[in-house]
Image 1 (cartoon, rainbow, N blue to C red):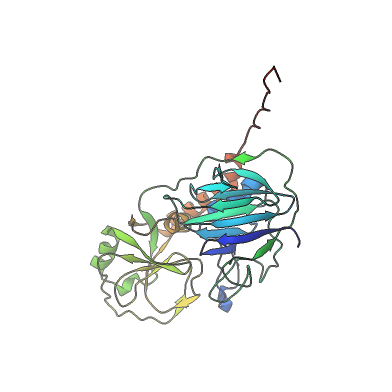
Image 2: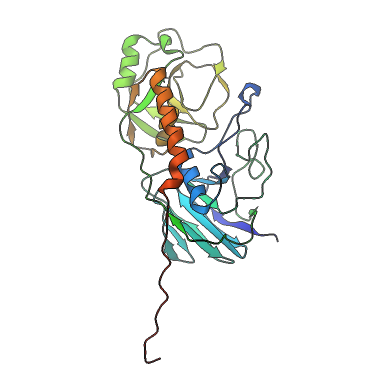
Length: 326
């Protein structure tokens, strides 16, 4: 067997993800890609990879994996996930070098939904339409377009962990406050008081969620002009309101066209924060104009570019000194 990361007992929702596909939505191909792009980029930085290198994305729990290579440097980000190697606790938000036969187990956390497991060098997986991101609905990318299962072997591009110190980062916490949205493009399908009700309400994030979208629960939003529109383009962050009046926030695996009115769209800078909001918790929304959204996007891109400056070397543990009488 070639050098690989072996899936022993993976979590129930593990896929291979990078930053997603670009330029294909007009052909009906969803972009897919990481739900929390900040966490993906940071995981890659910790192991010395380019930011867009594919990693394993998991929801709630990562499961157990075996190192089938001479050595492998790994890092887990996204939340304070419980981790261990052969039962010995490890810390998230830093790199660790494991050796052949070691079992890495990634448990849960209370502060996030999506986690990322990056390996130094990345996985030897062929790109499809310019990306290895998994899109489950179309069976495209990753491990034959599906979730990882026990017995899967993900081939590694390098067989030995790179030289150099381990790296660490302070846990990355998302900002608090309302999720910022740009209203439209079909906010005129709702009366002004309904739009104000949407912005003034507190919404519960439900368990009805996956990589395609998350349903919210709150006051019913009445449509003033019906709930069907001529199907038009969708992007992650769009907030559709179907006939039942409860909004659904579309996410990275969403379809490219849809026929429900879109009341608003979450700005790109706040989308990772929304995706990491656990079911049962609450969110609010605040409207911003296009110029403000563009400024927030530029700040978001600057933050991604500067993540590598947040890293610090982990000092080597001092050699253990034997008692003088030995």
